[in-house]
Length: 72
Image 1 (cartoon, rainbow, N blue to C red):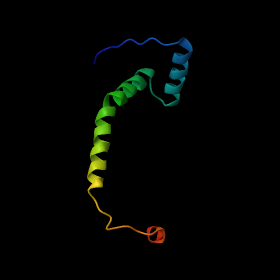
Image 2: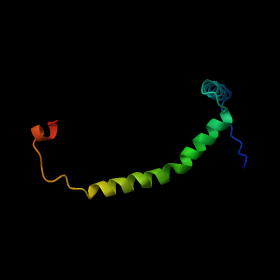
Image 3: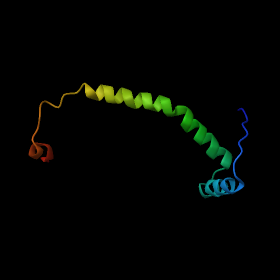
Image 4: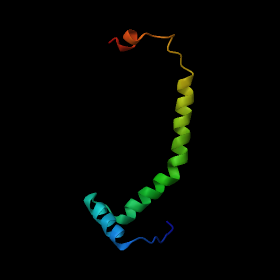
């Protein structure tokens, strides 16, 4: 694993450490999760786009009235 050094305001760091303690984890683990989230955003966006494209192919079978759509 590669090391990265971040700089931040001391008060922000202390608040983040308190959040990490509340989650029963470490500040380092929170940073790793944050970096992983950022790194995966484009891939997740592509997955969502693919699902929407697939859903666009489905036909509900015509138009429905408001009453028909609310039937249970």
